[in-house]
Length: 509
Length: 73
Image (tube, rainbow over the protein chains, first blue to last red):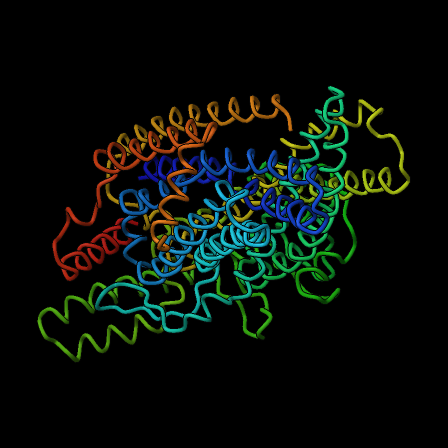
């Protein structure tokens, strides 16, 4: 079973990571193209049309190669994650269906006008279509992120023991959950950073090659403010996301911080080197070899109170600490017992219903309802399973924050050069740095997802379903086979995209 | 010219005048063929459909699986 869980997770991660190579550039570059075309519309300067069309071609290549790769994730739901799909079908299905319809009708319609409509529709209509494509793509992302957020914080539903499904009772609670809203803005604005980094990096290459200097500098002039606004909003919404994690997923927060023993006035680790997990569990008051911290910052950011208590990994397993709502936290063992009661009560409820024993089914239903909040703990064999991979979560989080913040510096330096009219095209080392910022932006973006998804393990649905209960009873070799097929398919597609993209860039504006 | 003809011609002429777009469409079509005609059909069947035809049978299967996975703990 463990092997099957690992292969299923690996396959899903591979597909999601691959899909996420395209989405940020679509969302980010889309905004930049929108701004460029708006300038063309306002100034009627044909140069801006040429610039817009160049970036639109790159946008089109990225869109074409990336389109529909997300559907592979849905294939996997039905085959590899059928227990999960059944358990959440009603809730997960609604946002995904809306996303599919919106993506098809909005993007497919307006993207055609974007590419075919030059000189065929009015300038204003073309501009509106460009912005509606960008808006449609962002709204598509919203529904996917709502579905993801629900998994991190299940809300707006009740569990129906007859169908064994969670059923949506409050659409707006699902759609407007604080996790979903923060996740949406954090994700979309971070995509603006990726798009800006790509635009600046490619323009820097033209400056190094001393080709299209004017067009490249004009492109950078647009990408820098978009990137700067993007990174500042990403940081702001990232704070909101971390606050929500502290409230709803304390184990993820503890892993992000490598916090093994809880404390009040908890500091935030700015940089650190963790001891191996088992050793850190033993030496919980000193779990790292190196630790540079910001005093009080974790309590303040996590709970908006410098004196707040932040539970560590061992506290979350042992329980007994006071929670924010004034109750005392249960231990992992107590939750596991409660979860087993819930799962058994569901099975007994179904058996009683089948033979028409109403009294027994009512009794089991009460047990189920009383313990449902710990339902997923019923599948946990050992409390150690409740701890995510601390090292990956910890370092991925630092990578995201440190190198994400680095983009403020990059964008600010270029903004300074532009404002002061400095000839930055002469600083070759800086232009090369700008080119290196393209892969760096992708790595930062992917590391954000690593934190979000690795940090919530073992849960597919927080507290309700772990990965071990979510997977289908299929052979791990079949999942391994499709994993290898995807490796080959994705590699070929990526090579195709990069070669077409590089060819177009070399052609120039 | 009616609106449907206008829309048809818009797309028709758009597709005809594509240069880079033709390569991209070829990639999209090959990709969709691989996804739906090969991967979906041969590698990604609906697992629960093999466990029951009705919703009741499927939910029964899920409960049994859950019970088994927690009993096995």
